[in-house]
Length: 93
Image (cartoon, rainbow, N blue to C red; front, top):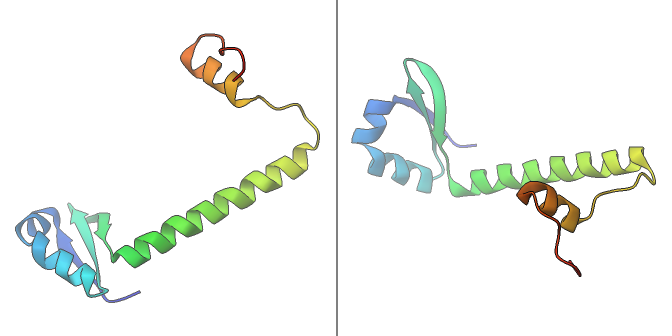
């Protein structure tokens, strides 16, 4: 990761363009509220890498759960939609 600066919400509002330029140059900025870090402006490449890592972790967890459960019956997509929307799934779904 590149250099990381820290600014308050007020400073971030006043200098958003500069902070975006820093991100485009590979530098991260942590935004604080009341002295506590609450967000960050990061280069898009770092954000994409974090998203991919999170997807990988969730995939591994799902595969581990499936392996542990074995041949336990599972709900279909139609069952899930019916449960979410509170009505029977249409035929053929």
